[in-house]
Length: 527
Ligand SMILES: Nc1ncnc2c1ncn2[C@@H]1O[C@H](COP(=O)(O)OP(=O)(O)O)[C@@H](O)[C@H]1O
Ligand SMILES: O=P(O)(O)OC[C@H]1O[C@](O)(COP(=O)(O)O)[C@@H](O)[C@@H]1O
Ligand SMILES: [Mg+2]
Image (cartoon, rainbow, N blue to C red; front, side, top):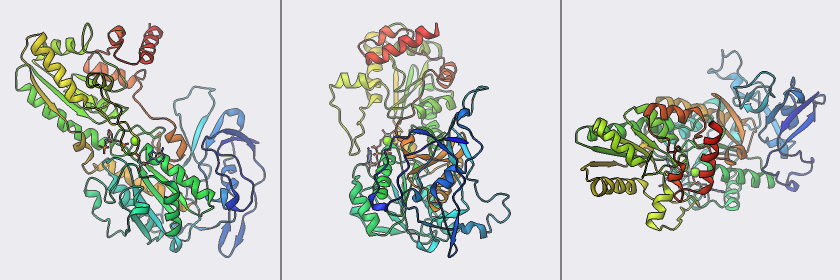
């Protein structure tokens, strides 16, 4: 029988130090299922074979198009690593659970809407506790680091990693790395216990502090080695996960028995593969307060124009969901959807029409929207932050000014402009109840994965089932709002705003020619 599995190429069984790091790019290959290698018992430990776990995914044939995009396992480069029975076997919490351990055959499908006869497609390993663990509890020294921008729920994830390790696996040596990646080599560590982290989930921000920039793989791994850390939990966005992949590769090259687990974090919800990033719901909820305030303000004056600027560097998810949730928003502008101000079908015309109808209008603006216009008007240079992310110009201020100028000078209409910028407020709050539950699941899944010897993985829900995803899969692309998907159409139907696509010529010279081409071809295809 043949099984199609996607994972880095198998490496010869030679000493760990001689291993080459596998290429990041995953590829798909067919491998035969042989009779499973014997499990040798030695002194209460079980010798495992990495292929054992992948190959036990029986029952699939290559002609049904089943692909497993597997995550690395410590035994890939440390084949003699002993394993032990999972202490959860004796856990009160799991005492009456029907199936404590996730079967090695359990996988999560990336696509759940399929057609009859279509290939089964890509799958990820299901997250959760495994029968065998590759660490003795008393030998674990774990560390947690948080990097990048803030997001509601980071503290809950930290808390639940600490409590999960301690309560489920009896681990009591957990270090907090302070101030992001650079904290590995520039700061002292913090000892984390359930008591220390008991209340942190009630606060926004990160208990461990964070930073941008400062990723130096060699220095970080030197530090991991010097401190004898063997489990690394890394909470952060796309940049952080890229850094985590480099740490994992370096760890593998050095042949260290260190599990590297990534927990994806970003307020922008732009991480690929996973359903949604934690804190996103909280941020959307918090954004309602700002939208509400804008609405109250502009409803109370004549010709009130409210603008609310929300986060979203390259993707407008927060703006889109906040708009859909609110129903007080007349128009939502996101980076993915180019807009134009002047002429037929433009923003000025739309605002004037709504002012005539309702005497007020509320616009929600993602910070990454219309950056081309702002850059043109300010002759700005492309500045970057310490992590290399482009620093955005304030589109909110620019748009408020443009609208004021247009109505006062060109249209000779008095308007009352209220510009609200709650960007940092929506990500600095503690997470709401549903995000807290989500964070708990993420943290526990990460702990189970690391204890089971998986490494170089990111954890997250795929079609609402938590899975272990190869890091490269979540960093190779960024999630953006697809204008061709139904969700954006739902928003347009809800606000009844212009799509700005009916007059692509109005965009000429203002947005990238490639975007215009795309719009034209979309229109052509949909006619
Ligand atoms: N391509 C990369 N390789 C290695 N480290 C990176 C990379 N991109 C970002 N980082 C590091 O990850 C951390 C966070 O990245 P940043 O982009 O600021 O936030 P986020 O992880 O939320 O996207 C920073 O310390 C940065 O140095
Ligand atoms: O001012 P900071 O801390 O750099 O953060 C601003 C950026 O952080 C974000 O909230 C999210 O960015 P990350 O996910 O990369 O951390 C962006 O929406 C925003 O542009
Ligand atoms: Mg990022």
